[in-house]
Length: 555
Image 1 (cartoon, rainbow, N blue to C red):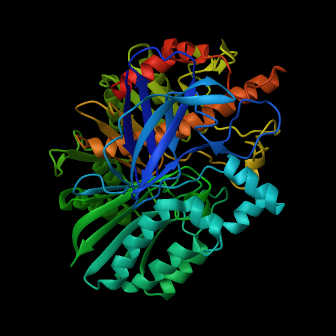
Image 2 (cartoon, rainbow, N blue to C red):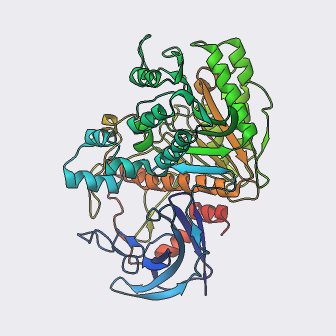
Image 3 (cartoon, rainbow, N blue to C red):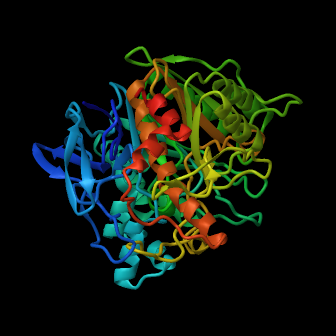
């Protein structure tokens, strides 16, 4: 008897999925064993068999995982890891090893996805047990987190910003050291002291179209201090004071050698402490001269437009079809910029996104901030045909909400909750071994964006995967009002799986918290401990949601 185990990774996490090939009598869960840089260890689990007081955590040989997927957040960039899962059979106080999977092939955690693309993610999940326990130990409130992330040496900032911060710092340090490099940036918000300090060191080789943020009153400028600092450093600062009429919402950076574009950085992260630390964000670095030139041309259009949305700017953004750029390893990419001219039918960017969604053949995963109803509903509607899962910071008012699923609770299904997509929530009141967390309403003391990524991952585990990411919020406002960009990359399996691991981790994290909130609203007790009934596994495997996930992963 065997267990088939698969592992997928990005720069900071490993997503595991396994499937027993036959029935396992008296199975009460699975232990996960990890080899990290040659050292074997057993992963810990915080959930025990008792609803009463339990240790903060215990080896999964004692508290086995009652599920068939798990995201290992304990692996770090640079680690080489492999895993196996071991069925634990018997009774809660007398568990022994059952069937065991083979070890996965060694997995090297790195931001590199192929020869020319690097994907970076932060750990910006404030609504979590990790942050909840830290706040409890130190007597902090939510506002204290916002204070800590502004300190460039603070361990909270460094942890939450994760590889996203490291990737940006590495890129900027290279520009500082290499006098042949010039930077052309288009940024929405710039007030992070560490990133600003690096840009200052680039000095005269920095060219930046700098917007005035999300201000509400004409003449205000969120970036006034950064603007003055960069001007004093000799940078070429082009003002784009577009708000409150519209937002100069880009976050891209073109790297040129001797003024010839070589690479481009884009993604969802604003260059501010909350963008790095307290919002779920991503950044992507693409070494491709042709694509970088396309971004440089977009930058030049912004520079020429001043504070306005000129006809030349909008027409240049609306080129259709966009130029396709050949990447290494048989992948390809193209970029879309906005705003674009208003049309009675769908604008070119929205139409292109809808085509990608409708063309998905196996799976569609997404993380969104404030999507428009057209994109959001189109994504959810595909769930009738393919595997669809996602997390969105704020649902549009006209959102589909038609599919439910239940969690397993002592062999019985718990009350239903939305399956396809969830909004982020925190645990309001601690119970069993769980501590209370920052809640959605309390997060307002930090900011309003919890999920800030703008990501689509199409057919991540199939033969022709595609990812979409950038600053574009997949909405009409992003299309027809704001300065935005997104990049589409197809054919890079490592990249698609890196983004899939990120989305699945976010979805899984908030999925249970949403269920917990639903229970609390209806006065129902939330699942809080492991089942002592081996029927849990049969229930789990027969659940259509679980079957669909495993099938999408290739199990």
